[in-house]
Length: 393
Image (spheres, rainbow, N blue to C red):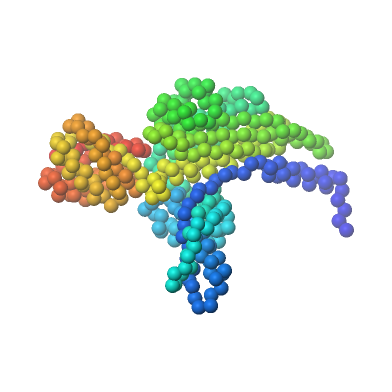
């Protein structure tokens, strides 16, 4: 019979206590809801219950593929989905958080179900990274970050949370406003993670995206075991990201975490690090998905500003040529003028991909076919959401 000594109990407690305290932290709500249809073959004397289960599982797979598609470049999506399909099939139970059957029906060949499912984007992103897929940058949006941090009731001039957010965003391909560029934004305006504070931060520093947040820690208590005293602290993290051009909230997350350490200050810092690390996957995935997609199609609205157009007829020729681009679903002539003409192009892909197409020989040949004139189109400036170009002979 195994004898458990007092020393063994203390040792076990020291191992288990940190895990127990961390386990009671709030979980990340990292789901996105999608619609998907699944099918299963109907055969003579089929077990209808089994066939229905197969159709639902097929719908799960299709919903999971939509979740994967959120985080892959559009041009690589089909190929990459094929490469990760086996991983999707083995992890469906982890990807699908919740679902409901919207309708189900039979035809002569198949049993069909339509579901509304919540896909765990945290697990999808983790799977892609496990398989070697990094989350792609969506046009290198210029991003400002400002997080107000109070640890144990004291405001902190150097935010642990902000440093962690900045490093993670930079690793994912976001182009960040330097800390000294954002120094002029008053911290009083960032007392909470609200969209107005984020919008003001983005506008003040000409950023495409602003991430703001508020982080606080509180003492949770202490416990003595043997010669050790363990202190635990709770961190509350509230983060929000906003797109400057529309004021749209791209993502938000509120989460708590508990961490034990041998001092209250160390526990406070550790709790912040744990909470931010747990919150960032959802925030980043939501931001990338919302920047990359319009109505789940992968399309983005890009503003094209062209100088050098000499007539309204020429502006229409350029619009017609733009409409022939394979990845452009719509082109609107938003503003005409001899000094500046503006188009809104709904395009599958980032602005830099559209810029490459506009300077290509194939596009210039198309423009020549419409206008009867040989012209050049040179990109003069490009950022996350807009392209500036010069039209010339």
